[in-house]
Image 1 (cartoon, rainbow, N blue to C red):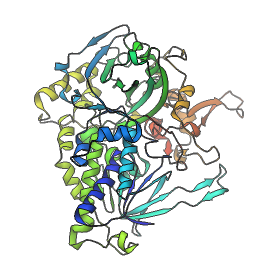
Image 2: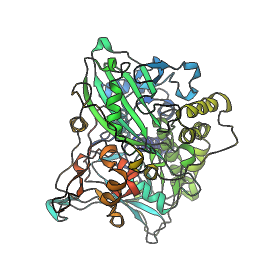
Image 3: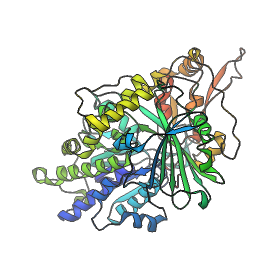
Image 4: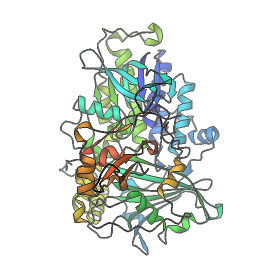
Length: 576
């Protein structure tokens, strides 16, 4: 199936690229065939974000007369709640101190921003793209990047075969995956996308850049009594439970947002470069909810949704080269999240729009352009692959680059010195230097290698869940809507060359941290019935996976190969 432009991923970056391409086609009287494939069961099903939304890029994308706030509410009854109050708290185990807003970094202030469901915004954008003529196919998981005969240029992707049993044999429902070919393939898979990571490796796109570092975000959505609701409240915290001293280097914090009509969006983000193998991000989140200044926000309420997803934290210094022959990286596949601002949706949307403009120009305006697939129905196999290099130039000249460059050293300040010095440095940058400091700190090493040996730490005693405010993991997992067909090959695979790592390294040296950092209970060690010495073996419950990608990042030696399951599997988020 040939297309002029194929977009892998139906998130904010991919959908914005599709919309901008159609806008340019209509404006210039041209026609391009544009396709979006999404591994979730529907657009938005795999989308999870905080989300306090900066509308700048969306308002640049949509026509001047577009009222996206009203249209979003009319389309799926999802409110965009204007921020009315910003609060930043430093928590102690029993109390808190509010940091005056005047002392906060300017990028943390949320005047003019909105509390939204990013998944619902993506459904709205997907509907808009389809109305403009974009073909969108949810439930199709891109499992392989396709290259030309010489292996030098991307020519599309192949979707995963479906209907294969655990034994590797075709079932009665078997259908061969589809080869989708395109002149330009734009990868918008989100953080740690499997195809995107393979491209970064193949084309060495991160040469001369810092290694990427990640955080794990865990989120719940609650419905609370309207009399307890504070529409527009945005609250962030540092300190308890992740940091207990000024120089603690566990990077992370929490968020709590009140969205109309009566929702509380709450969660924790933990930097995955933490050293303590006994730390359990999910249980830290549950413990945080019991804090006396946090608990009242949930009183009388009901938890209605749960999920998790990793996010990029490397920022400006870890951005790879964005283009390669035949395609480009968009949004969080590249890593445009602003870690100080705690936002990446606006930069993702902008990257999609800029990429679309570069691709449109490359396909139709350079050297007379090519005959669109929309007219010819095919792609000449001898056609030379195009690299839309103006995308890189456009992002380098955009406000995204300026925004990320300003705070390029902030995450590394936390990593080097701890929470209090990191805060002080971030304040200095945002209030005084504005990114003009003449140094740039690089980050080397993988988050997996930041984990230290268990012998240096003490197991953490977490309080048991009460089933009202705090929950056991598997109970919460049901609220994610996660489903995979049990009778399929596991998509979480131990790398052949690292087959000895789970029992021989992870369990024996690091006390099996995957049992604690996975927010879906995928990994557990059980008694090995074939062992006479009481040894344990690893069991992978792949059916639990919420596609957060944490295991591909934090596993000792990165021993897991994260591949896509059958399309449509995974979480089914409705209000994340």
